[in-house]
Structures are given as C-alpha cells and as structure tokens.
Amino acid sequence: MNNKFLLTLAAGALALNVSTASAQEMTPLNSDSEPDRMDWSELDAKLGAFPAVPAGTRVGGVSKTLTNEYWRTLGEGYANIAKANDIEFVYQAAANEGDQLGQLSIAETLITQGFDALLFSPQTDANLMPAYEAAIAANIPVLNVNDAVIPTVAHYVGNVQKDNGVRVAKWFVENSSGGKVAVIEGQPGVFAAGQRTAGFTETIEAADGLDVVASVPANWSRELAFNAAANILQQHPDLIGFYANNDGMALGVVEAVKAAGLQEQVAVFGTDGVSDAYASIRSGDLTGTVDSFPALTGEIAMEVVLRLLDGQDLPRVVATPQALITKDNVEDYATTDMAALRKILMAE
Image 1 (spheres, rainbow, N blue to C red):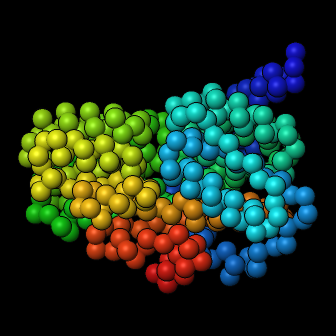
Image 2 (cartoon, rainbow, N blue to C red; image 1 turned 180 degrees about the vertical axis):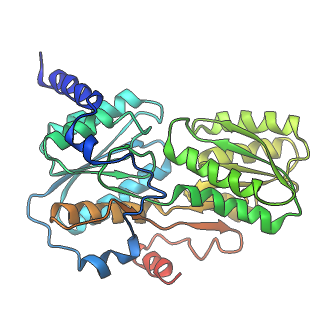
C-alpha cells in the first residue's frame, strides 16, 4: 500500500472515531453565534502587533474551486500576506464546487508535504473532516476559512453568514410596501447557505406585508439559478424580489428576470461582491450584493494562521467584515487597495 492510501484510511478512521481528542474538546461550531469570538478590527489592539514570521515558514491553502471569482480573490488575499512576509504559499482547489472527493484528495496530499499550517475552505461541512483530523493528529494547525464549517474545528475566520441574509431582508422591509419574495439557495449541507437563507427568511417573516413564497437550492450554479428563477416567476408573476446565496446565482436570476420582462418590478440581490456583481449593479441590472470582501478576508485569515503559529491565544472565531452594496454606495467600496479598504471598514 502506498502512503497516500494509508493516510486516507487513517484519516477516515479518525473522522469516524468520535472519541478523538479534538472531537472531544471542541463542541460543534456555529460560527455565527460562537461566544468565543473577536472582530477582525480588534486583532492588533487585543493581541498586539503582527509577529515576525520565521524564515522557511510554509502555508498551504485548500479552496472550493478556482472557477468562482470569490475563491480566486480569497487566494489573492492569502498571497498578499504571504509575499509580504516571505512565506512559501501553495493554493489549490477542486475542479468545481461539487467535487468533494477531489478537494479531500488535495487536502490529504498537502498534509504529507510538510506545511507548517493549512487554510481550509471546505465544500461542505463534512467533506474535509477526515483531512482536518489527520492534520491535527500530525500537529499541523488548520484554520477553517469561509464559508462551510467543520464542526469540531478549533479556529474559524469568516463573516457572520446569517447577518448576510438579514441585511438583504432589511432592504426589502425598508424599500418596499410589501409583496412576494423568493430565495435561491446555495448547496444543501453548507453552513453558509443555510444561515444566509435563514437570516433572510426569518427577517422577512417577522415583517408585515412580505412573504417568502419559494426557496429553492441551485447549488451555486448560475444556470440552475436561471432555471429556478424562471420557474418561480411563472408561478408568481407578481414577485417583487429575489435573494440569491451567491453572486453567480444572482446573475443567473437577473437573466431570468430580464427574459420575463420584469426588470422594473423585481429586485435581485446576491452575495460575495465579485467584480461582475459590481458591474451589474452599475449597469442597473443587479439591485445589490452583500460584499464579504474576499481579498481582505484572505489577508485576515493568513494573519490569523500566522498568529496561531506564533503561539498566540486566539478566539475560536475571528469575524470578518461585510457590507450591503447598491447603486447608492457601489463606488464607496469599489477599491482594490486593501489598505484603503481596511481604513474604510475600520471607520464604520
């Protein structure tokens, strides 16, 4: 048997063994409500200046896919801090957002390659659990970064997912006189998708005059989102809005709304803040997005994992920023200068 096969067997056994030390010590994580948390803006004030990084430090990153701009941009944020600190950094991802076994294989391979720390963005809450347990058994720190949540993970960096949906729902409450709205969900089994949907739905249901008439998963796919939205619009031609769990799906919804000739009636919101979403907001097609600032999130995550390597006592969750972007403020946040963006967000 080769070493990789043995690692896979061992990792699988560890994942199934609920008596492992890490699983015993860590209660299942709800990153949105975890009391042991710190806002990203408090890191320096509470933990001190960013530590010097030892020569030869190596960090590996495992992402969902590089076909989605969000995850590419997150990797750019990682790379910014790695380059500034002369860190060897490797960033790899699965072929697509449904390739759970492919992503697990990538993570398992990185574990064997001698990295000092690993950054995991799992496709689902469960698929990288075997690799996580194997890394912990090998004394390799793992930081779970947006947006699925490994239940027993010791450290997580990401935005408050439920608040994402709440922000969009509040826009409908404040900018409409009531009506029917719908949700295009992400992938079932992903913490972020469930929380975003719950935040939106609960806030809408608590408001007078608004009703969620459909909530359909589209698995992060623009094409599936187009089809789902087209069906919903046929069933509810008086619909006033959609909330999609990511921007790719939201742009598919925009296409369906245009095809139905309902641009003036139906507002469409997405999530992530990718460049195509910003362009669509500027053109008047997409109503808005909740930008979770992936490049800045990547920088924060790399800073956190380096603090962990330095032995600092970090909370279980470090919360990253987000903002609701519409035509009214799109230019305020449209910067690729991370230092400038930090100043803007720190001032809020």
